[in-house]
Length: 233
Image (tube, rainbow, N blue to C red; front, side, top):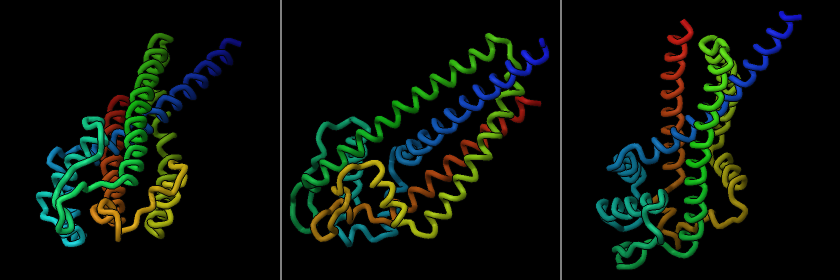
């Protein structure tokens, strides 16, 4: 009877550990978004993308002015600016770079991004509480946590590979589905003839950003995997 109770307790501890590792991996994914988007304070990735996709030609702007708009927009998305509005020379005229549709959609993007960061912090807090619980209950966390992490990682890797294939085959369709899931309107659909923002951020930019986020996430996961292998040994 004692043996069965011991196995039951360990099984429960394993599933709790697996939940903790799932939350941790999700938090790492959200952190990868933040690092890919804001990891370089000079936004050199954005500058390279603008050159790659000839954004200055599409906007009839100088690169330094495009970077000013970028710097302001990124401050807005992280909550440092209240209103998405910057007057600058674009398309041969001095005017507000953003229009009302830009402001509405980017307001939703801002709420989504900041909400994701708050959710990340909640996940990390739950992971901390789970780890403390395992330690207080004197469970063998050095064995259970790495085991749970790698089991969860295998399942998520399969899902990640399938998503990667889908994005590679038809990025436009996947990008559309993403917006349909997270936004309840069609104001994310812009007209390049009227909207400067979509000329500054073409689809190719987002495709490259997805690769950047994925690479960052894989690097973080590899680092944590190595650390857990050391802990287990």
